[in-house]
Amino acid sequence: MRTRISTVLALVLTAGLMTPSATLGQRQVRPTRLQDLPRGLTEAQVRAHVIAPEHTRNIQIEEVDPKREVIYRIRAVPKRFRAIPHLDVAAFGASVHAALKDNAVGYILQVRQNGQLIHIGIWNWSQMPVDANQGWTEDTRMNVGSVSKFLTAVGLVKLLDANGISYGAKIIDYLPTYWTKGPNIDQITFRHLMTHRSGFSTGKSSSDYVFMKDRVAAGVAGVGGYDYENMNFGLCRILMPIINGDISKATNVPFPPLDRDVGWDAVTLHSYRDYMQANVFTPAGVSDVGFAPPPIGQNALAYPFPPANKTGWNSGDLATMAGGAGWRLSCKELLNVLDHVRRRNTIISAQKAQYLLDNYLGIDQIISTPA
Image (cartoon, rainbow, N blue to C red; front, side, top):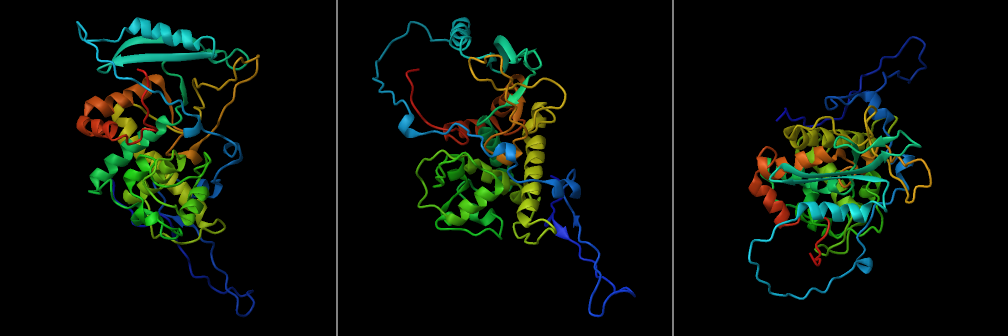
C-alpha cells in the first residue's frame, strides 16, 4: 500500500513582505496554493471542479418503491426430479431475446459458467444510425447503474478488512470532522450503508457531496429499516479515502477562492476512483475505468422506445454520483471483474465473495420471485 498521507490538502501560506510602494499597515502576501494532492490530481483540476454539474441535476435513477413492488405469493410445492435440474441455456437465450427484441433498440447478453462463456446474444444497436451507427459488441461500454453499488461494496469490504475495521463499526468515526452530524448518525454502521438500512430516507436519487453533507447534518429518525438510497453508497466513496489515509478526516481548511466542499469532493472522488482501479478493476485485467463515456471507442447511448429516429441520450460524466452509480464498463469487463471477485481470489477471497452475497452487501433489494 502506498505511503499514507495524513493530510492531503494543505495550504502553504508564505509570509508576505511589505514592498516600498505598500501602504503603511498593509502586507502583500503571495497567493495560497494547494499542495500535497494525490498523485494524478492537479491544482488546476481541483479549481475547475464542479459539484453536481448541471447535466447531472435532473437525472432520476430508478428507486425501489415498496408501494409499486409486485409481491409474489409463492406456494411451496414439493417436487421430485429424476435428474438434477439444469439451465437450458439455448431456451434461456431465446426467451431473453423474445422479451427484449421489440422493446429495446439493442442489447448484449453473455452467460458464463464457472468463468467460461457458454452463451452470447447480440441484437442491433448500441448507437443507432442517426448517431454513430454502432452495433453492440462485448467491448461496448455503458453506465452500469446500480451494479456500481456492488462494486463499491467489494472495494469497501477489501479496505475495511485490510485495516482491521469491523463492518459493524460506526461511520461517524470516519466522516469529515467539519461535517455537522445530526441525530442518530452515531448509530449508523458500514453494514447499514451496504444493506440500505442506514435510516436515510431522501426520496431522491441525489448523492452529490453537498446533498449528502446536508443529509448527515439533518440526521435520521432511526436505523435498521430498509430504504433504498443512492447516498448510502455515495457516502462510501467519501469514507474510503479517509480510511485509506488519502485525506485526513480533520482536514479543515478553506481553499481560496474555493470553499472546502469543492476540495473535499475533488480529492475523495479522485482517491475513490484510484483505489477502485488499483484494487478491484486492475486485478481483473480491466484498465482505465471511469465515469465518463470513453473519448475514443464504442459506448452505448440511451434511447426511448420506440426511438422514432431520435438521437440517443448521453448521460455524460457521472462522477458526482460515484459510489452508488456511474461506473462505465463493457459486458465483458463487468463479467471479468465478477469472475475475479467470485472465483479467482485476486480481489477478495472466494469465501468473502460468498459472504457478501449471503449477507446482501451491495445487493439492492431482497425479494422472492416465482423462479
